[in-house]
Image (tube, rainbow, N blue to C red):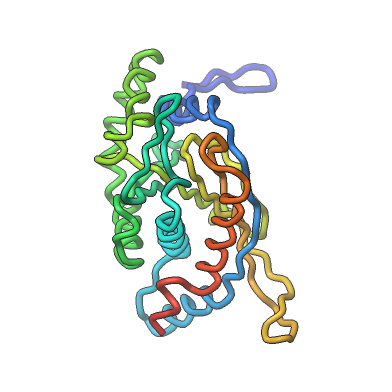
Length: 262
């Protein structure tokens, strides 16, 4: 429904956006810290271009980053833990990662979240296929429930959402404890993303910048991916956050699980 006014229009606020707002509310109570860094993805992108030229399948950059994040998090599980009571911390045995797929719903762009369960136990190909399958058809199963959920009063939505985001038993069975958001895929050029998220660990993928780098003592053009690692400061201090970021950078630049196949 549109109403034309002098100098502007009034349109209906999409109901599905209510779900996004509900998910963001818990973030208001978080004390988040951010580590901004860059990772050299030149060799990873060369590998993907080579595979495409050969007509062979190649996992997406997003799937690759998700795998790296899950495997690094397994080396320090506390980094993705959940504080669910004043003096209680749930440390999960596996890393369950959510990433967003942007889809058009009722004419509006809407982030649809696919939860990749036990990401640390899956191969790159499995992660890629799961995201691709969801982006093609899987998301459609969620549209109806999301619209019905958005019709509920705000206080009821809050009652329903709270345990889904704060109960360790629910997260261990069907939820997630890490978010990877790929905002860089929607635009060209470099740049970091500062997210507004509620998960204990959030990795935001920014843009890619081409600039000089040093390889074997010589300067050559390289491609650098902007990454922001966001942590719940109630759980993680600066030193382990910095170590996680450094380890993630090394996993990405070494082509973890990808270039080792060559």
